[in-house]
Every structure is written in structure tokens, then in C-alpha cells.
Length: 538
Image (tube, rainbow, N blue to C red; front, side, top):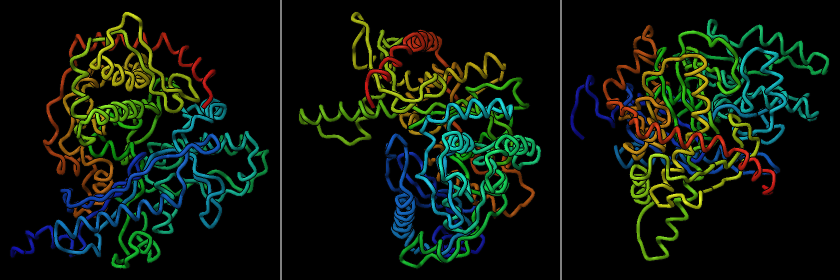
């Protein structure tokens, strides 16, 4: 080991001293854990792959797999630390957990789930979401926790009267490790309206909701079962001895690590793209896709297509969210790869995508008359509570592999475009640039150019965006123990991310026109998708 001074420690010394910060994000297909230096530089990572399940018509993850997956991801992080730096991971300077936002986790006093976890992917709360949007004068999507709660009330589900805690996946994991029912501002804003001025649950919305269900006879008021909101930069608890044992069954991790407020994947997306100041925007594209623009003021009207959420430090955000993005294309890529292997080809999954995705740039501008709907699940923006993946083509369409790939990438962004049209055309929100992150941008030039065509907006990709939400959560953890307590989150991110954001790729006019033609076809044929849902049993 090279000798260094205390002012210039090695990475191994930073880890051994317990100064590194950890972030863990429970994503749709992977739980990733990342370790960073106090100034945000990545040191090591670990991961665990998983998939949601459709059980009795509900998209869910078993909670025992949540716990086991987090522990496995952390063990992989420990192994990576030892291999890279030659030291064990025994102490942490700070930590934090993020996860897929929204959904429904309702527990009893002991934290045991009263019904299986209902994820963001479920579109089963349409009646409740519509009623609450009118009652609260705030857009309440079907994914939100309050929509799930109210739908359970409307359905007469017996467990509702026994609820003691209502939280998100990140909030539940935070409780498992600290014993604290706390949540970050951004994640909270996907459960129930949060007042940007106070950074707390909207008092008038709470009053309206409690009055609305007063005749139901529940022993709880909504504010009693919601978690405590903690602002970015403030500690939200410490890892307990039981929490340390949960993370590290080997017993080497010491308890006492301060954890920052748990956040949602929207918040970590804003962090990794340094998009927390007003008029900045980002787009996250992978299993789902959502674009977020930090607003200068509240929108003039309530739009069902647009979520109003907050940045981790409390600025209002307009978000267009689509449930489906790349999952159907991934399935087709797997099928094409299977065919290639049958013919004797040998390649990795990464190589498969690196060969397939660039073909999209060689296709016809409008994908040659082909059309797909990647509706693995329902899509609220276009009015679907269920989905059926569907591929169509005109008999005279240009059925080439390049057009096939282009059609699927275009289709992955059409529902998003539906929502963005509301922000841009109805609310005149100015979007000067979108910063992209997520699996859609792994083949960077392709992802940027297709997204620029679909949004008619320049698209950049930070060099650090590939680190993902776990890195963003680690930055929020590091921000909690920052030396300068007066430093804003935006200034902290400027110092970490700096000039690592690449030059934005401008939209190509021909590609923009091609996407517009495809989008018109997509919109016109939505009744075909509706017929598939009606006629093809799930």
C-alpha cells in the first residue's frame, strides 16, 4: 500500500476508516448497492437480479426476497471491496436506500404486511384515482399509495381497519434497518400530496381525505399511518444491530451508520443527472420510462397524465410517467438471440444489444409502416388497466430488421410522448434539454438520438449516469454527512458531477417527422390494442 498523508488518503484508507457512503436501490429487475468516497467517486458495487411476479392478478415481490436480495447485493459489494481494495467493509460513514416509487405496503404495528406488496405496475385503482384527483384537486395516478389505499376501502377489503403504517418499498426497507418509519420528500410525494412550501404532507389534503372517509369508522387518521417526512441532507435514523445483521450475516458490519431519508427512483434519477434546479429536466428509461421537469410554478390545471412530485430537496416537478418501456423489446431481443445461437453464433447479452440497437438508426424514418405495443402491463396515460404485447405491420410495410428495432424503440416512448404533449403544448413548460439515464441509453448514441426524435428535445447523458440509482442514493447519503452544512443539494451535485455531462444530441428534423408519423399510427391503432386486451385472456 502506498504511504499517504491524512489529507490525501487512499481508497482503502477511506473504507477502513468508515468514511465511505453506501447507496442501495431496489429497481424493477436489479437490486444494486454502490460504495462511494465522501466526494461521490464510485469505489465498488454489488447487485442481485430479480423479477416481479403476477400473482392473483397483482404485480408483486415477496418481502422475504426483498430482504434476501438486499443482503445478497450487500454481500457482493463486500466481496468487490475486498477484491478491489484489499480491506473488509466493516464501517460506513453514511448510507441510504431507494426503490421503485409508489405502490402499496400496509402493515400492522409489528411491520408485518397485511396484504402482499402491490407495486407501481398495477393499474387496478382507476375508480379511486379519479375520485381522489377531484377531491384533492391534485393529480393522483393509479400508482400512488393513496390510490391503492382508497381503492382497498372502496373494495371493502377487511385489512384496511388494521393498518398502522403505510409506506413505500424504500420506506419499509429503511424501517427494517433502523426501526424508523421515515421517508424522503421525493418518495413521499408519490404517496400523497406534499406541500412544497413546508416539505410536509399537505395539511388541507389530509383534512379533506379524513373528512371524506370519516363515516367508514376507522380508528386511524391518514396522518397517523403515513411515515414521517425528512428533508434531504438530514439523517433519518441509524442502522440498528438487527439491521446490521440483516445486511451482513457474517457479522462484520458495525451498527450505528446514519441513514439519509429513503427515496424513490425518480429522486435518484434527478440526482444522477444533476436535475434538481428549476427548468432542468431528465428522462429515465428502462423497464418504465418517465420524464421530469423541475417547475418554476404550479401548473395551471390538474392533468391526469402529469404527476406532480418533488425533488429530494423539495422543488415541484412535473412528471410524465409510462409503465412500459423496454421490456417487450428485451423479450424480442432474447428471441432473436435464441435464433442466432441455434445457428451457432456465440455472443454475450451485451454484444447482442450492441449489434441490434444501432440498426434502428438505419431504418426508415417512420419505421417503414411497422407498429408495436410493448404493453406488458397496463398503461394509464393511454387508458389501459391491462396490456397485451402486440406487433403489427401493413402488408406493404418495409419489414426489415432495422425497421423492426426502430419500431420497438419508438413504441417504448409513445406513451411518454402523450404525457409530454400536455406539459409542452397545454402548459407551455419550457424544456431546453433532457438528461438521460437508464438502460435505454447504454448504447448511448442510439438512445440519445431516438429519445431526441421522440421528445423533439436535445438529449444529453452524464458520464456518471451509468452508475445508476444506487450511486444517486449514495450521493444523497454523502450529502447527509457533508462538511458544509449550509451547502445546497444542487451545489453539492455541481461539485460532484461538474462538467461530466456530454454535449446534448439535437433532434434530427427527419427523425422527428418520422416519429410524429409513427406516433400518429400508434394513437390511431390503440383500439386494436384494446381489442387484444378484451379478446386475449391474460
